[in-house]
Image (cartoon, rainbow, N blue to C red; front, side, top):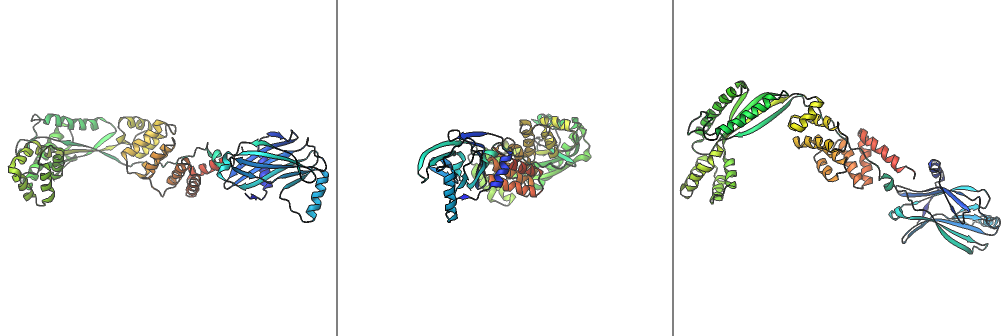
Length: 482
């Protein structure tokens, strides 16, 4: 492999910052200190300070030192160091004068000699766990070897990956805006039953008592919470698809008005807060219940419903099908469940103090807005179950929110949960600096360092303070001297 140009000044700067440490070679006559074997990007640097205070070389001899990287069948020899005795140095000078070129660092032998050796070479992956050895050869005046030995300089190759191993990149979060008016809803499907063609609410009729108790409980829950204010009650009625649709609509409306009057009186809710509407004949519900039933003819009945567009014709076909027996069964066992109403209570949630929000998160997270989830999360240490749980609750209440998904991805990254972080990032806004930063964190934990660095640079240029922190951590790590 071709060795690059000596970067002496750069390595001198490295050596100035390195802790003092030394090893002795060649019968303890040579001392090497501040040994550096350091990879960054496409290059690897070998550097050391060499002292020869105890070295003895005869005038007509030379000592050749070759720092070499070795790993299995792979080997890289750096530029040799030739330490010449007095006569060998004279011969070397004459050869140079005649135009001879020697690819080596030639050092005339002198007592108390101290010099810096540094070389840069192309880095290859096999070098990460290579052994750095010193091949020592003593030669005579005719360059014949008198002695050869090999000693280990160091096994510590400092690669970017090793230096980055302890780096903990910072995940980014977006503080959501405060919800100006928090409107929430509770929806309950009621199955009140009425005598044929009647619209009066009869609490003791069939299962009506249990149904009405459930509605009263909904109102009580909202009314007793001082953080909630009822803003609207919506009752929407549905009819089973039997008889004329116009008649069904009028009967449904009268029943809804009766329920409205009953609830406003019993639960002390102003009639002005109520809205009623007719949702129509529940054909979709009929198909669903048929699919769930064990009726032998259900597939044929579903086909009639799906392929007949005229309601009157569809109803007649169902009544006439198979002699009318399936229709009689449906009237008794299926149609009653289609005569129902939904009772929706809309209420406004007051803004919560942080201490209240912490309590409400455990009791009823539906009452928090995204900003409150965010504030509660950061009352906990990053990476803790409560920190992550607050952001998970936020995304459960707001599953399609880009901000909620970005933040829960950041929370997962604090625990290096890459899979869940990637799924959440898929729903985040990809144009934000926070998304780019968190994509960089994800790439980092996957070992895609080049992509991670590109993301951090891009996010920092977009104004991300977290990306700026990550870049500083990155530079500190890769430039750390080991």
